[in-house]
Amino acid sequence: MAHTSDDVLQVGEIGIRLLHTPGHTPGSQCFLVDGRLVAGDTLFLQGCGRTDLPGSDPEAMYDSLVNRLARLPDDTVVYPGHLYSTDGSASLGETKRKNPVLAPRSAEEWLALFGG
Image 1 (spheres, rainbow, N blue to C red):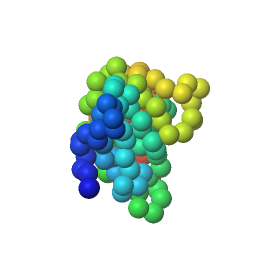
Image 2: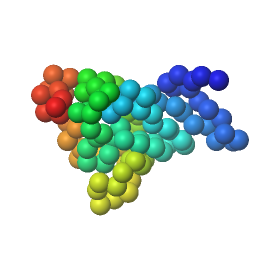
Image 3: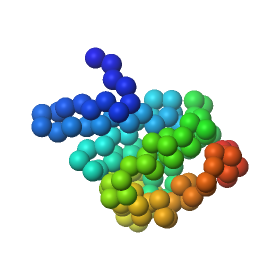
C-alpha cells in the first residue's frame, strides 16, 4: 500500500508518523514516533543534509525544515541520521536555537546562505 506524508503506520502498538521531507533527496523521509523524530539526512543537530547533489533541491529543503520539522513541538527529541555533533540527540527547541540552518527567517535568506 502506498503512503503519503503525515500518514501514521501502525507497527503493533506503535504509531509511526511518516513525514516526507524532500530536499537532500526527492524521497527523503523522517519518522515521528512517540515524541521522537528520526530525522535521517534531513536535519542534523548542527546542520542539514547536503543540497548540492544530483536530485537535491535547496528550496524543498527549506520548506521541509521550516514548514514541516520546525513546527513540531519543541520537546520533540531529534535523532539525526549522522553523528556530526557531540551529542547523539537533542530537543527540537534546543536544535532550533543552536542550528544555523534553522536561523534564516525567509526562503530567500536561507537560499542565500545554504542554497549552494
